[in-house]
Every structure is written in C-alpha cells, then in structure tokens.
Image (tube, rainbow, N blue to C red):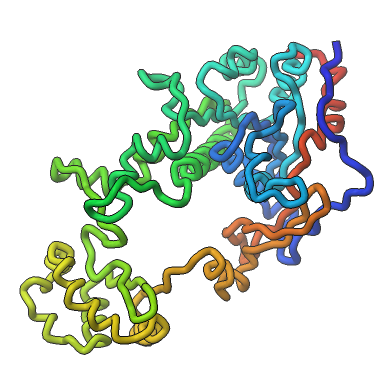
Length: 409
C-alpha cells in the first residue's frame, strides 16, 4: 500500500533564495553529509535541527498533514509565518500521516537512512508509532536519537507536557525575573525552548563525533526542565551555598554593583562595573571620588550588599544628562555600557551589519523578508542560508521517491 502524499510539491516557477556572499560552502561546514530526520513542532526541536542545518546537515522535517503548528503563528506575510521561517531555514518538508502504517513505514525508512533523529513529542509517542529508539537501534546501531521533552524520558513527571512558560515557572526563572516585590514575570525571550534546543544540538554534534570513533549510537534525553535549571548555574549555586532561594532584583546583579539599568534625563541606560577598576572609573565619570573610601562601597561585595543605597546616590547625577551623554562618557572611560535597545535598535547596530547576521530570505510564496542567521563565524566567514524555509510538504514527493521501493527493516 502506497502512503498518501499530502502537501505541495516543488513548483517549477519558484526560485530558490540566494545565499549571502560570505556564505560557507563545502567541507568548511562541519556537518556536511549528515542526514537528520526531524519529528518536531513549535520551538525547541525545530531550533535544534536548524542549528544542525546551519552547520551543513541535511534536515528532513516530517510534518503531519496539518503541519507544524508554528506555521500558523503571526506575523503572516502573504500567507506564510515569519516565526516559522525564522527557525526552519535550510530544511526540507515532508508530509506524512504517521498513524497510517504505510506512511509510518516511509518514516522508518527515512530514519534508517539518516544519521540523526530529533523529536520533541511526549515520551512514548514515537514508540507507539513504531519509531522509538529501541525499535530502531538493532537495525541502525549508529543512530543518534535525540528526544526533547518537558521533563525527560523517565521520572515521576515524564508523561507531563510543557511549554516555555510553564517550564520557566517550574524551573525557577520566573521567581528571579522582574522587580523586587513585583508579580511573577517570564523572561521575554523563550529561554527554556531555545536553551533546550542548544543543548540538543550540542549533544548531537558530540555524539556524532563519538560515532565516528566507532562507539555506536546513543539515545539523548533532553529535558527542558533540566536544561533550564542547568543554565541557572549562578542561582542554583547560590541556593546550595546559602540555603536561600535567590529573589528578584530587576536589572541588578546579586554580586556586582553598579551593574544595572539607571534612569537618565530622557530614558534609561545600563552600565556594568564588574570589577574594582571599573568602579573607580565610574566614580571618576560622575565626579564622586569620595565614594571610593565609603565603607559601604569598599569592596565588590560591599557594593552589591548596599546597591540600593548606591543607586540612590548615583541616579540623581544620571538624571541631569541624556542617555547619549552617559553612553559617550562611559565609552570614553572604558566602562561597559549600553542603551536599552528595542529589537529595531539592536538589529540596526553597526556590528550586526559588519558581521552579516541579518540576511535576505525568500519565503515559499516569493515574498522577500529578512532573518537573523547564524551568529557564528568559521575561519572568519559567516554562514549563509543555503535554502529558504520550506512550504508544507514541498519535498514530500522528492524524499518519498527515495524510499517507496525499499524494503523496510
């Protein structure tokens, strides 16, 4: 029985996006020749596989007939989600109804012809479909199988689902985000999703190196809950060292000061005096050298302990001049500083242009947009975008044609 092929083919009139001039080609991309089968939706899993694709891997994204739910997220440009485009470049899309045995058979053959599987379903889902690691390892002993889930493949919470918000809440992030005494606030960037994707990509790359050495494949368990706790190393170590859970400090730092946002005459800016020499430079800029001998601020620990009092002394000075003034004088003094940029300002920073991070991107409908590419450089060159994000099912016929006549293992 042939699987039903659902989704758009590759229309001949569609032109492919052109890689940027500085793109990395050929063997300089370390994962060229690696095949990845993706069974993911929304953020953590797709971000993981995009990182692998940016390093040269061929990623085949297997989607249900309804597609990855992220395809529906706005902003929608002429019918295509910009959010989806942002984390699904350099991939091919295949539509398969995995509840159909023949389609699941095609998926199995795709996996057995791949080096890596990345999936972010609830534990047990892939096994029920006949596509679990234990069901495949006998036929593909070198398979690197990466499972991203809310709480991991085992333990009392393994069967629970989760999203970035609930994982931030569970892992403590919301308890240290926001102003002291204020309500719970999540980090504005989905750190649980993307930190888990980063952990997954790192683990896959490391496992591939091990496979090359002949040690065989591995099942990688990436729990979003654990990854979010892991990136909170400063907060967890504070708890282990003191027995107290850290609290909210707004933009301030628990162990450095002045190291926060301050109000100027026309807005806010941030400075980070992360050591004693930088502290002395701040005092020189604001004309308050006497504070160097103030017992409340003698050491870094003293300043962190008494930073509320320090803010009351510094901020009236900062309110007398503009943000641009303070940025310039702290730049001249060599003190790390920044305006509080929105994303329009951050993306227009001259460093972004110089590094070639923002790249032109064509959507499957032909609409032109831009995206933030890989921030990494290899041998001084920024990786370009090899192919635009795929239309739903765009490569179904191409990929399925490889496997229709193969006998499933």
